[in-house]
Length: 149
Image (cartoon, rainbow, N blue to C red; front, side, top):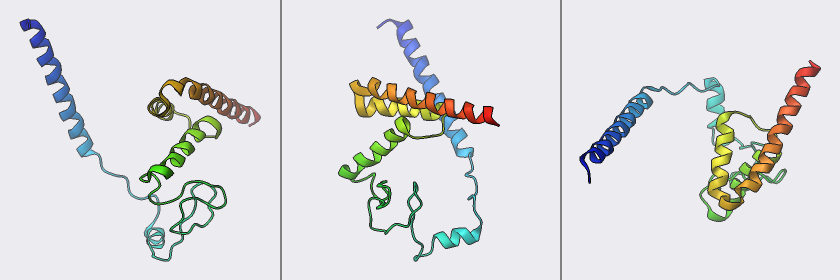
């Protein structure tokens, strides 16, 4: 192995190490933001008799249920850990990207693209077509509301 190639590899490894150290120091300085609600709401939510609700339709849920009886959304505590029910959680994420209104920013778009590659592999381009159609629909609706105002 030539010395110049070895020196280049060592330089790249050292730069990567220094980057990891810098990122870890930066992450250590980040302080979590306080809760968006006051102490009364926090106390009420943590009570043993507090009723969990569906994040999609806001209907009350039983603590032992896995799916909302009103809208079918996966609401169980451990849905993402159970192999069979996990499929439904992933399906909801991809359905949100392809058919529902969602927040559109670079992070969500990149996240949907990477997640679809990891889940669908060779069928990911089929999903991407539907994702782009949904993004254009959302953009069109946004422009229509801005023009109406």
